[in-house]
Structure formats: C-alpha cells, structure tokens
Amino acid sequence: MGYIGAQPATNFETVRKQVSTTNSGTTITLDYSVSSVQDILVTVNAVVQSYDNYSVSGTTLTLGGTLNNDRVEILYVGRTFQTVTPAIGTVTNDMLVNSSITLNGSAVSLGGSATVGGDNTPYFKVALSATQSNVGTGNVKVNFNHRLIDPDSVFDISNYRFLPTTAGKYFFNVNTRLYSSNSGANMTLRLYKNGSEVDRLSEQMHDAQTYSILVGSSIQEANGSSDYFEVYVNINQNTADITADPSNYTWTYFEGFKLIT
Image (cartoon, rainbow, N blue to C red; front, side, top):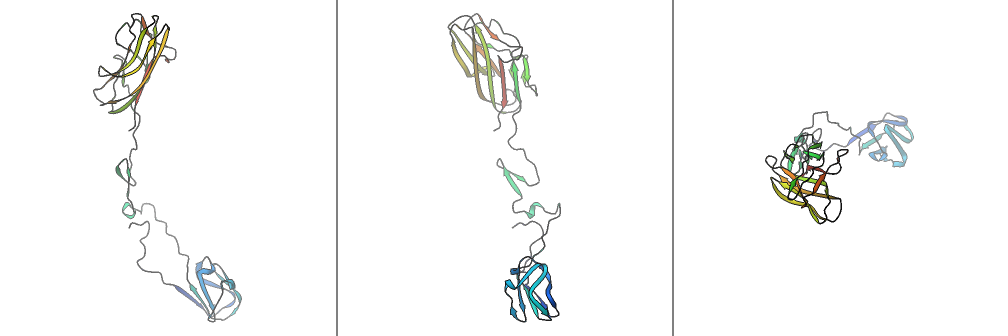
C-alpha cells in the first residue's frame, strides 16, 4: 500500500514511564507533553490517583496535594507525537495509493496534464449583405457573402460554403427572410452537403403574404477535409427575393459550430 511522508514504523511504540522521588510542592514537570488527564496514569506511593485528583497542561502535572519526596510514578498511556509534513517535491507517484486518474477512458498520471472534452471550434456566423433578387424557380443557393464571426476563416464567402477543418459533428442554424408577391408559392429551406440535399430545414406555403421567415437547424457529420455545406432555398415563383438587412444582418444568416462529443 502506498503512503505519504515518512515510511511508517515496523514495530509498536513502547509505553513510557516516569518516576519522581525528589519532589515538593504540587507540580511535576512531565517528560512528554500530554493533552488530557486520561493520557497518563498517576500513582503516589503506589496509590493510583483518580483523574479528578490531578490536572495536566502540556508538560505540567498538577496534583491535588503537596508532595514531600513522595514516590510518584507516571505511566504514559497516550502521548502527543509530532506531526511530519513532507517537504516540497519529496512525495512521488510511487508513494501514493493511486498514481493516476482516468479521464474520458484514458489514464492520466498525477502531476501531468490532459485536455477534457475539447472545444467548439471551428465556428462561424455569416450573413447576406444585399438582397438576392429574382431567384426564380428551382433550388437557389443563398449567397452568404459577409462574415460576422469567423476567427478561423472556415467560411468561403466567394463560393458561399462552410469548409469544416476539423472532423466531427456540427450544429447548424439558418434564418432566411423571403419575398414573393404571388400567393400559393411553396417555399423550402434546405441544407446541402457536398452538393446534395441532406436536410429539409423548413417548408411553408406562401399565402398572399409579402414576406415569409424560414428558420431551421440541423446536426451533420463532417470529415474535416473535403466536406462542405451550403444553404439553398426554393420559392417556386418567378418573382421572388432573398432579402437582406445590411444595417444589422438579422434577416438572412447562417451559423454553426463543432459539437463537443
């Protein structure tokens, strides 16, 4: 079994006895410091003294009567020993019961370091800076061309796609504000991976409204090298726009981050 500090003794501590025959007054100086009257057994001229007949304070024994070269025997049945504080750098892993702990299924030595859980990088948020007009029928890619948050430059604002640089699962959120003056338009918001639809984020029938908001989220796997993600809409009307708000970019935006798994 491991230990901390000095190695334990391999035998028992001998009970100590003190004898006093040249004494006077009511006190005797003890050889060892004690904290309670029950730590010692006192006899005066072979008569065992009651705990009520004496008191102790550190190394001072005070008896209930005056001594006159009486034979006083003190048996130490419970002494106060010093405590040992290990010096800095003297306790090694081999001296501990457990020299390592397990984090996420891997052993980590005490005194070492480990990364727990990872982080949510890379992450990004981009927006449409100007209205994308006359998107017509069919699937149309949303041209997110303005970086709001992108510390690692993982969003390609020339090709309007997210390029994850780390393999893992990603959370995406998309908000779009669409315009069509025609009623009965079927509007859909879609997430594409590597040029193909992987999730239908939102869909609704445009019913004589001027503007519609399509919002959706998705979790997708990325290999961290060749995968890329884009956002498409399909308004199914010749006269339709994807609107932008260049003042604060709250109408049409795309954001995402890597999940900690």
